Length: 146
View 1 (spheres, rainbow, N blue to C red):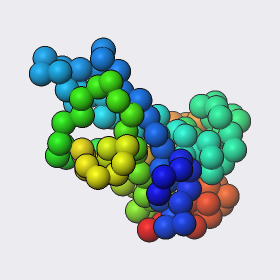
View 2: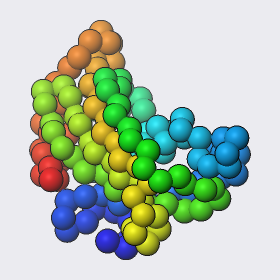
View 3: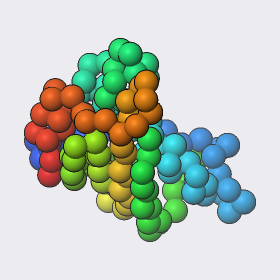
View 4: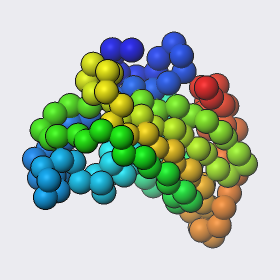
């Protein structure tokens, strides 16, 4: 796994950059920025799988989601500025839910900085109530469940 994108093992790899202004008082990546990196990585996965780069529910209703749950374990500090690899793995697709696992790794994959999981719930753009994924969304995400 060295190039970004979908991998033969059904994971999705993305290289991301961390910056000096994301540090905490100890000079390491502030805990809140892990969540931002997860957001950006998941949107990148959505764009690649669905071919739509928008958050407009009228155009791409399957990207209109709310976060239901995040679990995040910090294992080794990240010292910005550096590039890291995020590895995303679809764990579960439910009627209106999607759980993705994340690994934050060093550029050479040798260090596991953090691991996380994030569950989102698809919402209807008009009623703002949970709504089932489109058949296309389900099929594309179920195809890469690990």
